[in-house]
Every structure is written in structure tokens, then in C-alpha cells.
Image 1 (cartoon, helix red, strand yellow):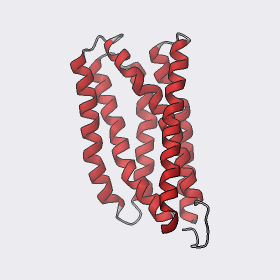
Image 2 (cartoon, one colour; image 1 turned 180 degrees about the vertical axis):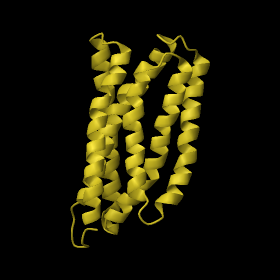
Image 3 (cartoon, one colour; image 1 turned 120 degrees about the vertical axis):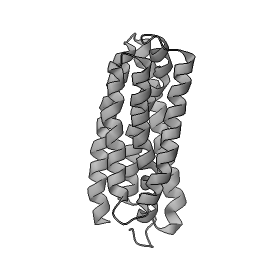
Image 4 (tube, helix red, strand yellow; image 1 turned 90 degrees about the vertical axis):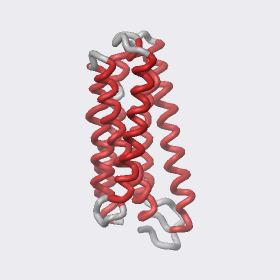
Length: 195
């Protein structure tokens, strides 16, 4: 943890913020195009879209509760963060090869498993790394990076679709920023051990 006299954010907090930026960049390249993908090439219905969002949100909510309890145990936060981000890295680009709406629902649920696992653990780590007087700033910085990534991802998806890139390729391209997210999360695991 940083010393009480310091006013700058700990390196680990900045690193986790970078991870979230790249992760949300990739996420928002995929999420906005899913309706067009499910109801277009896959021939899905509005019911399928509703099931997609409902199942994904329920999964994330349940796993947040589980992960929050586990993250309170010594040594559990870092593995949960790595597993959570790693799950997203592996599964989200695979959505591009889906041949039916139910497959997209399954992939999306697995993606939300990752979110449910990592979010409480990541927040717990931010608290543990940050002096009490800097915690508001730390969470503000992290959330700003998170939302910046979401905006950039949406813009990237829009630019690719405007250039008439196939929706499957747009989803596949989301692997690029997501790989950077994983690299950063692995670096921060090591950095966290030294703080």
C-alpha cells in the first residue's frame, strides 16, 4: 500500500484502470452490434434478444455475490480478477463464429461469468491498494477509464460498420484490445505483490 503521505494514486490502481479501459473498449465493440447479429445473420427474434440480456445479467448478479464473499479471503482477489478477465478474452471473440441465437446466449452468459467474478474482487483490490484519503479519487479514476474505454469501443464499432466491415469481423476484431487487457492484468498481478 502507498504511504499515507503520498497524494498520487498507487501504480496498481492505475494498472487496473488501464485493464478496465481496454476491456470495456473490446466489450463495447461487441455489445452494440449483437442485436443486428442475432436478428440478422442468425435469424433470431426479439424474444432471443430478451433472453440474451436477461440470462447474462442474472449470471453476473449471482456471481458478483459469490465473488464478493471469496474476495474477502486472503489471496483470492488476484486469481478472481485474472480468471474474470481471462474468461472475457477467450470467449467474446468466439461469438463471431456462432451459427444460432442460442449459441450467442451461451457465449454471452460465459462472458458475464467473467464479469461477475472480477468486479467485486477488482474493487476490493483497489481498496486494499489505496490509502483511505485517496479512495474516492481512485474509484473516480478507475470509473473514468472504464467509461472512456466504452466510448472508444462504440466509436470503433461504428467506424468499422460504416466502412462496411462484416459484423462477424467487427466482433472478431474485439480480440485486439482485449488481449491488451489481459497483458495489463497479468502485469498488475505482479505489481500488486510489490505494493
